[in-house]
Length: 293
Image 1 (tube, helix red, strand yellow):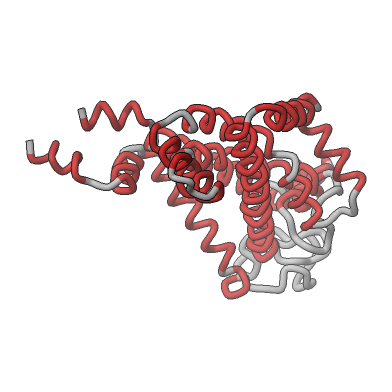
Image 2: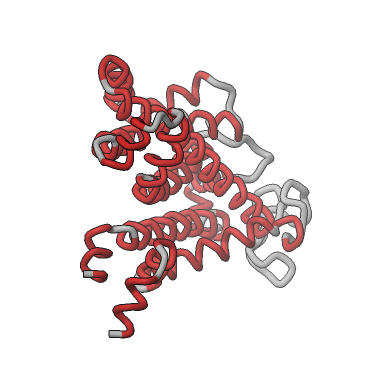
């Protein structure tokens, strides 16, 4: 009985965190992503060498001096891996932030105002979604000058349709609720109704969806950099580090050049997806109602 009372009295954030902690894979994913993110953030302090400097022999295997070996021109692989992780996380976070902001604004406008504005926004959304995603990204990357900020902007302005549709669907149901209608009757400003009343009640599914967008953005950056359309050398990126693996010699006799960046991409994406799955289960309203009921 006491436990039931504790569940009833806890705040919404406490409920989400308690339910999130039950998901072991989600907690493991959050921990792994946090450790990798911290290492990337502290790269200038913990990287043994300048990632763009030639500091050793060409394509040297791992040793005590170079823990992950060196690349074809003698740059330290561990240092480049740390800085490349910063690039991937930066792309994932900023591209997700841009796409989420665009999707939320368009979804709020379409869902709240309805009518011709809803029709125009949704038809434009459908048009963007009708193009093959990877083809759209490749065409945009080919048009603009390759580089870090170009990739961030391209991915940010390509990934928004899913979030816009999600927000619109939630707003359509929320605008008919009593608390929104009472704010309208009271003459509250439109900005207050949209961003203080409606948006907080749809933030949970937005966060869940944003985790998948972040993982996808990191994969897209790696793919574009691998193809030479993303981050350009000598800057380190997980994608352009994998570019050297196109050679059969590297694949068979120099695995330290491609296994670490490839494995790190897999670990990061899986960890983020596990955390997203746990967050989805944590914010599930049906589960909360069953616990408190």
